[in-house]
Length: 331
Image 1 (spheres, one colour):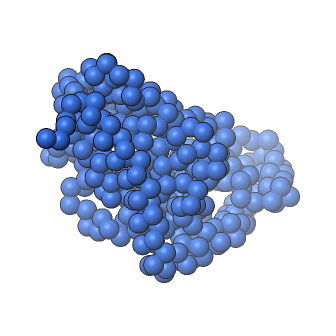
Image 2: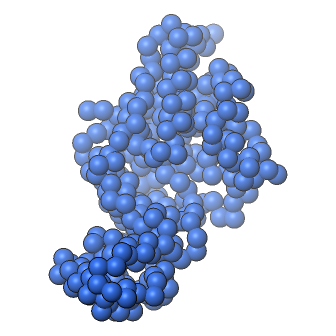
Image 3: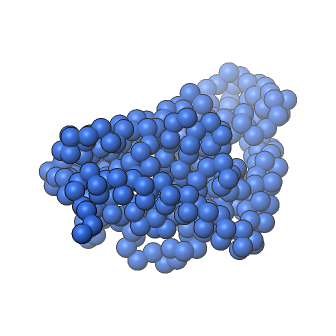
């Protein structure tokens, strides 16, 4: 059984793109591997050094991941800041992380363009903290997107450098856990090919959206003036709606609207109304679970406590052994 580690952003609600992307695979993985899923509240401070409501952001993310199917008994679901061993390993790895290699990191260059007035040390050493998150549990597999592949490469660099400097093979090399073939790509409502909370307003459908909000979003979705003759190619916005319907509607419903489009008789208003109702039917059980779990403070406290205990058991063993390898010894 391999050890898998994945970080979870500590801000923002989950949307359908998250659900059909990583989360469904996390739910499957947790029964097949030794999984550690952490909510990355330390990482959020690099971009938002004074977040308005860090605690409730973290809480909401935990609620939604639990509602989406993460089982705290099967996997270790924990909050990054509940495991102080991570920051100790971060410090130790920083001693052998070099300014030049960190400044060449693509994500660092991008961040300093986006926030020139907040170029903090945390941004520069972000890959080191990410490496600490991964190798603290001696993970061999890490589910990452394309934008994180360089960070994973750097995690391998730091793990290998530690082994080389201290003449050991203590840390395994972490590699990408690629479930690309299993991903269902969910497009946005604004005509973008990707649904995401960082895209334009109205792009994403969140799991916690109530029916009224969801209907408004879908009815405002980008389309075009409609086909003028049979067989006309679809615009990106219209293609997106059909792709969403392919995932959320019945085959008969999808076929009905495909034929209407091919015959140039389609009414986009009817398609949007149907898609909205199908989205509401799909997200209703998830939304109910979110509300139920959010109201159970004792359960959330138990989940956080259990996750911290399980994560610290693994992390403290690593730190104890790392300190011995480096040469820290009690008098």
